Image 1 (cartoon, one colour):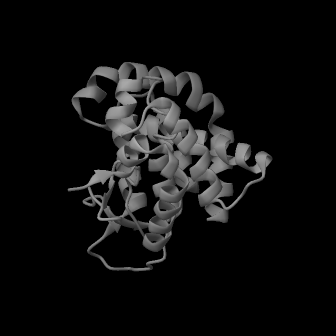
Image 2 (image 1 turned 180 degrees about the vertical axis):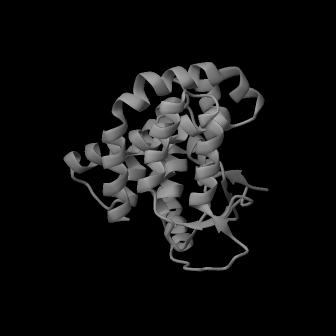
Image 3 (image 1 turned 90 degrees about the vertical axis):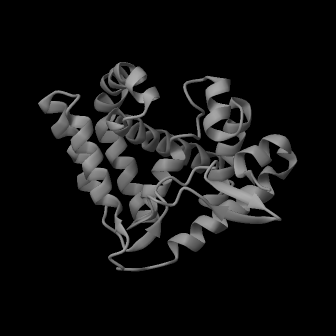
Length: 220
């Protein structure tokens, strides 16, 4: 008897601001927990495994370039969901509840921001695919992106919103390249396209991406 955050916003866009604010509160509540409990794995170690797996589909030089992202991602000591997008939080009787928590780890909020960034531009400009993954259509996702940036970074300044939007786009590219390592049926089908995108967009802009990550790590 519940629906995802994305589905709820899609059904009633007038609640977007209210629900996005609650969503950000849930993220901040999670990230306020500091722990060294060994029951939780390391978010950075998980990313390192993904980089290693993705590198097997790339040239040796590209694999080394990917490791530069790991150099700027911190270990951290806070709880992170690691897949904190709007379809992994349910609303039941007005309460927000996380699902798909098997990847919960110890790290830095940047790891959750990377997972959220992956959906904030929609999925390949495909309304059907975006609905399936995000629970929202493309137009709603783009409005949600601006609303999320305003609430999460606490800004109404158009220039800062644009700056954070560009950084979110950079984080999205990190997630996209890591997807080379995924083993789902969809990834197998689209892996050649993902690799092509990495070579056209990710690697040529790597230093700008690293700069955005450094800025966000220091500000979160």
